[in-house]
Amino acid sequence: MSLPAPQEVADRPLVGLLAVQGAVERHRDMLEAVGARVREIRQPAHLDGLDGLVLPGGESTTMALLLDRCGIRQPLQDALADGLPTFGTCAGMILLAREILDGRGDQWSFETVDVSVRRNGYGRQSASFETSLVVDGLDGGPFPGVFIRAPLIEAHGPAVRPLATLDGVPVLCEQGPFLLAAFHPELSGDLRLHARWVASLDRPTERLVVPEPTGAE
Ligand code: GLN
Image (tube, rainbow, N blue to C red; front, side):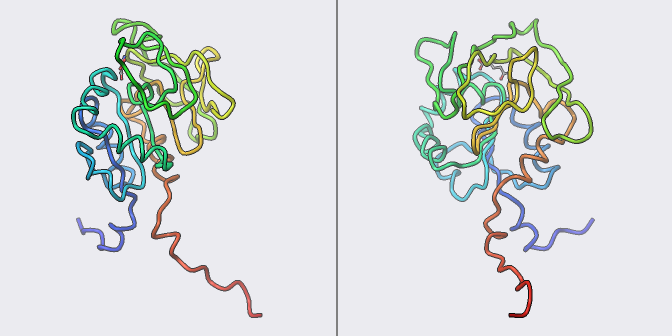
């Protein structure tokens, strides 16, 4: 196997993967499989120079607590305010929500995306399930949605665009640079959502390429 040339490595988007708690490994595998470089995020300095960020599933209450403890709550809030493209899955979706219903009393969120989510809205662990989702614009047929104590979007604002629904409720949606999944795409064995998201990230190196002149003037 030959190693990629240094230039090719630098061109691959650098994705931060929040790694204070939760389902990190499978996200890492998928992100790398679709060509991203992955940096696990555990402290503020890790946020420098990212092209995108993944907030994984896990336990949103614990994650919120640890983010405060590690001192990355505010730096992350700033990165989100700057529009860092971010993919929040399950607990990661809860962290990005404007409002959390059935949260723990002291639970906070970044309030980045205009959704109101109910924690464990699809039932508790015993109610975990898998179902086929039709995803807007995704080639290759339905996507396997793995739901584990998933948050339920009870309301969303006009800026939020549903990309897949289940019983009429959005389970995958976007608002500007933010993508939210109520389910676990990293557990599906299907790389398409990760591939599409990574392909959508801005690549500063590409923006520096000067276009060829289109004709003699
Ligand atoms: N129910 C969990 C929470 O409230 C989320 C579950 C998950 O990420 N699979 O954080």
